[in-house]
Length: 213
Image (cartoon, rainbow, N blue to C red):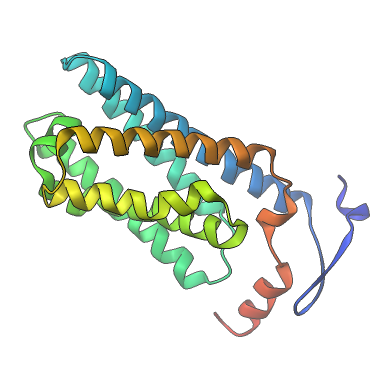
């Protein structure tokens, strides 16, 4: 739709229109989520169905890189009213990504093996998943989606359970599978959701910007 004929919306602090640039940002946000979700789901399937091998570890590492890239893109283009929260989620992603790079460069084991054998490594790389959980929480709060309501507690439960060695391997595998399925449901529903709700009330963004927030 051309910007010139875009409908006028009434926001909390005044009227606003949705531009082509706004729509592109939402499309890129959703594309990043799709890359992250599909990479995560495929990695989960491979991990749960394939025997351990160097080729598997290489594939999982590549899929994690794609997951991280997609997540980073989404966090750049996501529309969140409070800029501080937005920056915190981006910082979490950066810390988690850097931790993963350090493990891959300096570690003696492939990334998936290192995480499995040394749970404390999740303290660093887990920041990426904390950022993802932030997206799930935002989506649950804004759109009341049942899959994101389940993912918001499920992700930290699984990660903390592995970090503290509180979960059996079977329970971890079940939770990981549920995570992957719910993630796919989430991105599938995002693909068919109308674009304007993902943009939000632009008058709120303008007011927060005016207040310097």
